[in-house]
Image 1 (cartoon, rainbow, N blue to C red):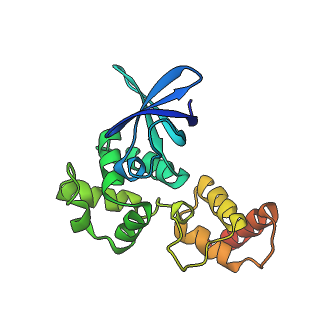
Image 2: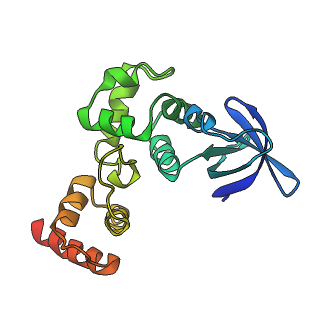
Length: 195
């Protein structure tokens, strides 16, 4: 698995970029949200990557931020959403925009993205409703950012199979300054009592 690429940006041809890493050129497909934030040709770039293996090709997808990569992975787990459609979604919407669309269940905004029809948009909203993680959203300007401890606890609870509502509720019950391991243990106790 190739998780990150850091090197010299050699070429930019949307949606493809070529990054030189010690003499090896990696072709990486990127969403337009990442493409627009790339440095100039000849400058250093670091991309979070997802390595996609198909029967007929091995593809590398790159993202400027970790939340974009996490969301791409969540999108491509949905039946009928492939890598190209996932890139199209991330090219048309920011991570925060998609989060708001899922929360508000606004399928009309999704249908504006090429390749997303009404049925696909509704399936996407249904599938992401309990899966989209608050830890992957980026803070809006002027809002307080969740602490890294809270994010780690939320990620752990999500990995253990708790949905976002349950995890957020449990983390909201924790006292300030709790460590990650104590927070996870306390959250698990709270969640087991709540069920």
